[in-house]
Length: 208
Image (cartoon, rainbow, N blue to C red):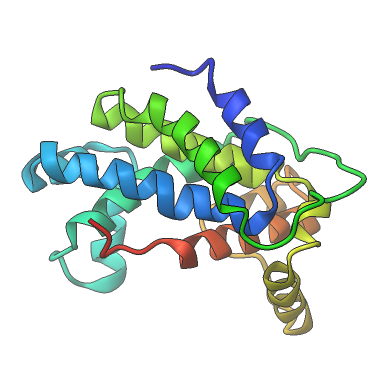
């Protein structure tokens, strides 16, 4: 699989403000990848691949939600997030240090589209399984490395961080074990988790 471009794509995302970066990953890139898969990959192929993965995301979903009728686009997202979570657990990168957040505020659509095109040039030319892995790795590496200054400059991220801290919420979810194992600080966990949550809210599973 093409991995040489991953650090470059992570760097491109980290130079964007948060709103633009989640627009790139959650809408533009994921939408175009999904459209291509819908045209070329049957639901049976998708389902078989999901079930073959270690700690199958499909099996976990069925266990959690007691149902097996999973929408195609959501199942595809589960596969991408399988690789995202694995990347975070492996701690492939460290958080970037930036003294200042990006100078722009709000959605910078033209700048974001340029980054999306660069990512899509790689993702859409990979076999679909490798495309899912690439997207998952890219997402995980961005969540881990996105500068704290950028996250704290985004009002939605700040609001969510305040909410979980005021409630005294304890780390949970697929990568919370990093905190208990001493591989990630609780502060870094919440920066990653809040950004992950913000990105999830950006996905539109009805896009085609």
